[in-house]
Length: 246
Length: 246
Image (tube, rainbow over all chains, first blue to last red; front, side, top):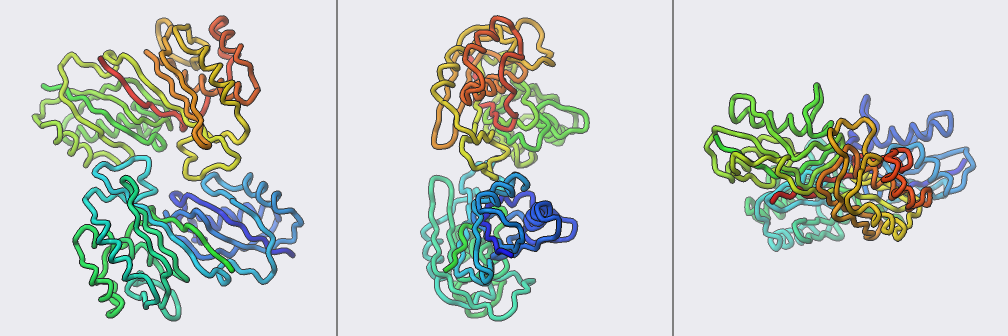
């Protein structure tokens, strides 16, 4: 048996998320269907972590075990042929039997894109969150600084989260950049809770719109109360941008 | 009664084209539904010309007559609220009762986008035609020159076309530009037959791939035979880019 690691990209619009769900089109199902065709038996894949419905990935990592003896270019070519066009295999690599897509990941970066102009953009409606009002980017940058570091992010997690164990995470980097009419939020951390990036972005946007003060962030770390923060930004503006390993 | 002209933009992906068709989602239907809500009676709209299923518009013009007395910003705002997000109203303008969106149009420009690289782009699959093989842009530019001017474009029309009258049209401008991994075809003319731009692009691409020689273009003008040309490029790479009036 060999273990194969794939780096993939996908447009999340027509998936109910990465993880298999009954009667839903998911990224995992599409890849497992393709692998089943190649193996004539079920193949389970493991990802670096799931993405929600509508959320995109520029870099997602999965691994699976196989008895097929194919070289890396052949894996990439075969899967490219079998997979639907809203998924792209960036690379296929043979890894050791000890490699694990989720457990070995040291850091992930998410990107969130906001379209900040009066007019909406029909072509980008599933790829950016349209905020038609004026947003104070400097205020958001200041607030973002408070999120950096190691904190208990309980308040930044969806209440329905089933994440076990502590909710302490380290945000190594968080950048807010405006380019023309887009605002890009880049968040790098050692782990993320359910909806964490979307709640961070929703909160920063509320602060940028003047609806909240950055003090709500410290309050959130202190009280662990979801309700002191902003709303959860929609999934279609979110991209899993990079997954790092040692 | 007043006549209103709208300039609109739409992502053609989830429309069966502009023109109303039974049991299909169309741009015309969506706009007429919105206008019906505002008027409490049926309103017919007239466009500069129809676009096919999947074809996009960066600039499409329509007109309709109304008894409602609203100013231009109110027309734009009300329709923006009522229309689905894959349509955008760029502007609303009061015009004379003699204005006609189709008959008064002097010239139209279409843009076609080809993604020319080995890897497909999941995010652009409904917006660009992916050609993974090497394309000779210089050969295409030379061939494009032959298309310019006034010709009988019968061979460049879908055989099923119901265009009446002569098929003589004037292509005022045709440009082929490569930027990074995209090739942009811009075609400006005084009128277009069914699938004309897509057949022009499909033919130029065949010439660029070395599958055909530019001589097929002169042959097409001489024989008026569709079969000497290349295939019809897919609709999702096509954009109605600009509609001009005096």
